[in-house]
Length: 287
Image (cartoon, rainbow, N blue to C red; front, side, top):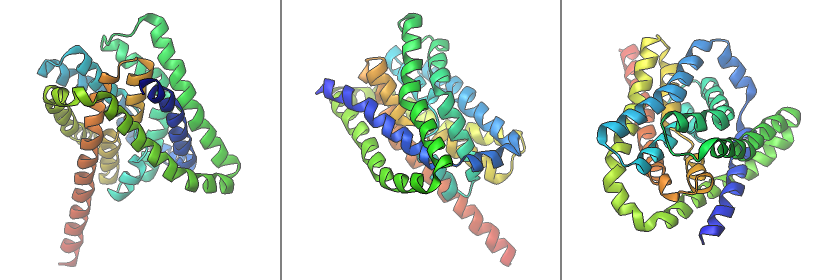
């Protein structure tokens, strides 16, 4: 069963990343670049702030090395496949969301191994680091670029493929999560008591950090909400793939499994808060 799961994960990841590439609109990303400050703030939060925060939470709560490595994997993963839609629901800037997802996904083959190395997560030498980087390029970077190019060259065909591929991608993501649950079922209960609090703290601090950075940089409210959503919605499928297949330690995926649930709850709170604030503004203007 473990061998079947290990064989399934890379193929599932490639389909997920192709689906993401087909949905990303480079035009939206270009519009975000016209006001690059928000993009730079968002990337700073996601690529630098989150790994530092995960490291601080791990050390502060005294997590075991394996669980600490799992939390670092979550922090180092790129933006999630549903973050653009969540940003739209939260009344954020879709262009900024697309740009952040695109940049963090394309950079992941380089940034994720470097974060692991900087955090002293055990990676078997330079060969192990290169293995992660090359494999990430094959299963993430390649399919995303193929999807983006296809959408640019043949938008009509790409849109039809995307509509049909989207439900398949969602099922594959569910399959990745369930397969990893299956692999780690025996250890989940004990691991949750050991790492659940740390993951919850990280999930709550993430949007708080994004809000503080956006406020300090004087971003518009829609841009702040977007950075908060993007920082919260991580690509947990990448976390699981790196842990289970590339590092050969399925137990490292346990923090990611817990975070997959909690990040969606936090995103719902952000969406609800945005709609509540909009209603209050509308009521104030009507009065």
